[in-house]
Length: 437
Ligand code: 5CA
Image (tube, rainbow, N blue to C red; front, side, top):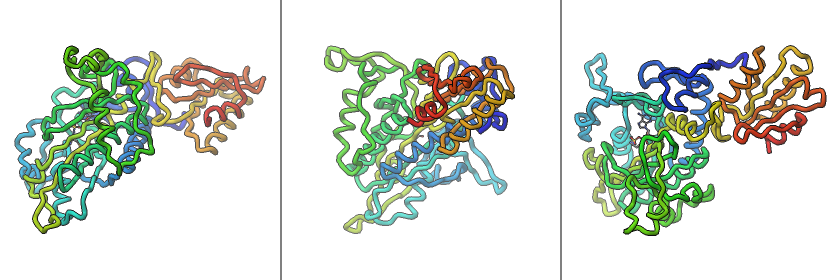
């Protein structure tokens, strides 16, 4: 993509309304634009990141045996009356009336709708377990939307729902998601640690939040000082084996707590605890038959008797993750994207647009990368060098190739790694090989 073609409305000054780095940088880098309080448009740069995150989630959910579908944003009130949540959900639910006076709502979550789908389509225990998910916009009329996409009114969530015939199988489904979450966040270079949590309006008695450690996190937690070195299950994890030992390891020694553990009672763990702040990027729940019982979701068991389904639900804040990743990875100049979610892998800076040797070398580099399917943004604007450097650091692409007349005389370009700051003088081919590494 050429920057002269790309829609990248960057801002030089710090926006007054932004209190934390991610909000500030997302606005300044032209990733999002506020429409009204807590509601944002995703501009091309931001949207590319959102799609990358969605894809990583999709791959890890599918690997763990889930299936993707898509449910609507607008839901009928009836199913929420059946579950009993229509009245208790309160003002956070955006309620709508259609032209026929039917009560509708913009979904804040989808337990009711998925339960309705499953109860009307699955008849036999033989068709279970099933774990269905979608990545869909949600609406919660938060009293205090803040920090940009971190706490929005409209936000993108991955929400998955498991259906099993008994508790043992349901816990197994929960454990799969627990492991899949560790893997998903690790692929985004995030240290997301599980913490036993309250279940709130979703219900149930087993639940974990996944927290990304960052100074601006909303909750203070205590976790093992070595947490960042703990090993995340690899891509070869066999989801058909018993995952309980891995989950137990993470939930006992590795998990965070919201209180400092009494050291006298937990000498081993207590002595190693350090305080940290966390951003909740995921939340998983096992709630048994809370919805299936209220909504009559049953299947025929082996003996012909009805079995009420055992359920769990599994959320990831997809749009919140964009902010969380920036909170966890930035410096004073801007964002530092982890490779896996970067909107482009490389930025090319032409130091002297109009200089024949510079233009030719830039074009050649740009074409070579595109031929190799490297996602590349070429700053071909006739702008000052200062503006170009500042913008490139701000948008945080993992690699920068700086091409100017002086270097070119010796056949060299400068390759900069955004994360380490290390710069090297290399030939165009060597720079390319380093990037493809
Ligand atoms: N039905 C369950 C799981 S599918 C559920 O709704 N869980 S939740 O309420 O915990 O939300 C799941 C995730 O969505 C949270 O962990 C958080 O990362 C994200 N989230 C929740 N509210 C917001 C919000 N207002 N803005 C941005 N992300 C949010």
